Structure formats: structure tokens, C-alpha cells
Image 1 (cartoon, rainbow, N blue to C red):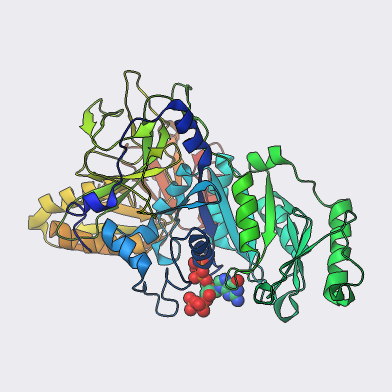
Image 2: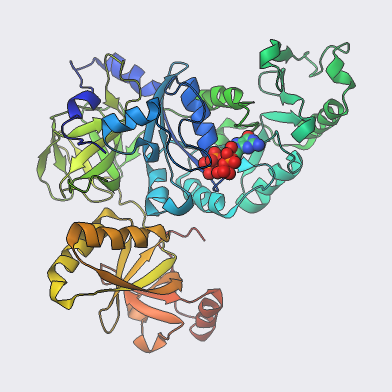
Length: 546
Ligand code: G4P
């Protein structure tokens, strides 16, 4: 990893002149900021890569992830990473496509899964849900979906891996309603699947998209007004096509109708089918998605005031803090979602939490196209601020006299817990310092046992503990011992209702950083037992994803 500070000139594009209101409005209207949510292996990386190909960011497939090895390949993509000095593959990807400026915010999955994954969803205006047609809705998709659903933003679904045999399309749509309680509206429909995949019946664009036909030239067959194709077309002889027509009749008669108001609030999801690996149906999806997804809208402050994206004053909020992976530099990067006005390097902003003025000299925009002449970060964009400890998750920053404070970001209920102690009791100071700073980054939660004040850490992913242990050792020279408590359900209790004798080994009583009491239940059974024993006691989760 190279020194970000030294290379800052290369990676940061500055605003040369203030822009007029009209161009600001145009710039905002172009923005599409979203995240892709999925269960590991559903194809998120593959579809992201196809989008980057369309955006001209990369030139060939396979560059984002060296497939089998899981290593990043040395490529033009890697060059971008090197120039920025941070891992863009795990943060923000920006490109221009079809007149839109697209910001894709990554939601790390697999072993990188953490609170940041959830929190990133607080900074997007829409989400794309990728589902493996052979597997349907899987656990991680469900968790991420619930966070997005609660925000009431549009969710678009891409049913992936159509080139393999999967489940019945009707079944997959029904599952969206049964498991996620969201209506599905099929924008297109597969004609066959796996080896029998012939194409897509595109209801939206009134055409048939043929599978594997790009090389042969003919890719689309227009549909007649009644939704059929010319009877002389050989496709009409195929059983798969006849089956599809049957399904389409069913959808037209008994299926949901496309309701854009419902789409806007996340009560209906437009569903697309395709195969990211063979780049089939992806462009059709991307084009429709970008035209239907919203441009950045206003954000409400804690005083219920609406901050409009085109307001004169700049504002934004920190949704993620990432330690710089360069061990020689302790700096961190605070990811700011711009909510209004324009970001300008070197500008002075007020940090709402402290009232302090900060000069934003060290900043990077996540630009993919460095040839871009004029670049501005406006509402919808993400700016990375090099931070020496000023920022905390959820912080609001703004220019102008009027204070702008956005609501706190939700805390996500951790699911895994460990007790943590310093190995060397003589090194308490570095232990406490490291602990304080790493907890501030927000990837792990800190609790103390109620009576003995022992430290307990909570996280949503196992990797967070390993990273914590590693960084304590390497950055703070503090060797820590971690004793797993295992998977637990965290539930807060009203302090007035608390009697410490309610605690047991199956429901450990701890307090959070604010001193609020909570129980860590061993399992659902233990929680139910508690409810039966203390029916009047109210328990709450911070932000439930389970
Ligand atoms: P993820 O980021 O959601 O975890 O998934 P990723 O894109 O890495 O895809 C997971 C595997 O699924 C990869 O297999 C990828 O090639 C494959 N895949 C993605 N989209 C499609 C598709 O449309 N059709 C088919 N048949 N396969 C698809 P892999 O290269 O074997 O990687 P791995 O399993 O060794 O990690």
C-alpha cells in the first residue's frame, strides 16, 4: 500500500470554480447511489464487475477478484487502488454510465461482514438485491434486506445464474413475498433455464432478448402489441417459449401491477432475471434500474428540518470509519455521504457534535475516471476524509451558520461475544487506549459485565475480533486474551425494571458504553424462558436483523 498523503495530488480532483445553481441541480439529478446486497456467492462481485465494464472502469472481466485464489489480480483496477492508497474494492466505486454518475457502495460479505456492512446501507438511496436462482432468499440477504426495508428506499432484485438450473421463477417471486414480505413485479421473465436457456421475455421493453446471440448479431426480437412474436420465428416452436407465454398470461392476469409509488417506498421490488457470469440480462437490468432509481433526495435533521440536496451550504454525515491498512500511518478514513451543497477540498466545516471547526485538507473522492476534467462531490457522492481521531460514526458536518445535525445512525445488535483481558497487566494504559480508539471506529461494540466491570466485546462477524486482536498488538502493543462467550442475542432492559438477580449464565447481564443494562441471552429458548418468568419486563433490540 502506498502513502496516501504523498499521492493525494494524484487522486483528488478539485473543484476549480464554484458552479452555478443550474449545473449543481444537473449534477445532483445525475447521481445514483446504491449498494448491492446478497448472500455470499450469489454473484455480487460478478455483477459489480459487469457494471464496471459498462462504465469503462475496467477493460476485461476477472479483474476485480482473481477468482479461484480469492486474490486481487494485478490489473488496471489494482492501479486505481494503488493510486488511492486504500482499498477501493471494499468501499466505493464511481463511474459514469448512460448519462448517470453511479456510486456503488460495497457491503462486504463473507468473513468481512461487520457493522459497517449494515451501516453502509444508511448512506445509499437504493439497493440492488442479487439472488441465486438455485438458492432463493438466503440468510445474509434477509438480514441486509431488513435494514434497507426499514429505511423505506427502493429495492431492485436481480435473479442471477439463469445459465444454471434453478428454481421456478414463480416460486422465486412468491418467496420474496413469503419471506421478505415485499411484492415482486417481474420486469422480464426467463425463457428456459440452465442448458435450456433461450432468452428473456422483456415485459418492460416489449422485446425478447436472445441468450448467447450477441456474437451472432441478432440480440433482440421486438414483440407485437399483443405480446407475441412473428409466428414464423423458430423460437415459437420451442417448448420453453410456450411455457413462458403461459407464465406471462398468468402474470398479466394474477400478478402484481407495476406500482412506482410502492417501488419508491420499498413495498414493491422490480424483479429482473439474468446471468452475471455470461453477461446476459445485466445491461437490460442496469438501464432500467438507473432510470427508475431515485436521485439523491433531502435528509431530515434531528429537529425535523429537511436539508435539500441542492441547498447552498454543504452538509454530510460519517457512516463508516476505516483504519488505513498502512501500518506506518495511524490515520483513518472517515467516509462521508454528502447530503447537500458541494464538497470542496480545504473547506472549513463545523462538526455538529462538538461545534469545532475543521479544515478538510486531506480528502479523497472516489473517482474512477481520472481523465475527468471537472469533478465535484455533490449530494449522493462519498468523500473519504483522512482523520486523526476527530470523527465518530454518525457525525454530521456542515458549512454555514445554521447547525445541521442528522439523526444518529442505528446501532446493530451484535451476535457474537468475547470476554477480553490484557495479557500483560502492566500494560493497562495501551490496552485502554487501543480499546477506546478501536471501539470508536464502530466495527465492534464494548460492554462491561454488570458487577465486575469485565470487558465484553460484541460484533456481527467473527473477523472483527481477529482484526481487533491483531491491531491491538500491532498498533497499540497490547496483547489481548479473548475468551469466546459464543453467539448470543442482545436485548436491552429498562433500568427501572432491572433486578440484577434476573441474570444467570444463560442471560449474562452487561452494560453498554452509555451505562444501559442489557442481557446476552444464550439462545431463543433462554429468551423465551425469561419472558415467561418476567412477563411484565420489556426487552428491546437496537436494530434487529435476526
Ligand atoms: P459474491 O461476490 O456474491 O460472493 O459472488 P461472486 O460474484 O464471487 O460469484 C460466486 C461464484 O458464482 C463465482 O464462481 C462466480 O463465477 C459464480 N457466478 C456468478 N454469477 C454467475 C452466473 O450468472 N452464472 C454462473 N453459472 N455462475 C455465476 P467461481 O468463479 O467458481 O468462484 P468461487 O466459487 O471459486 O469463489
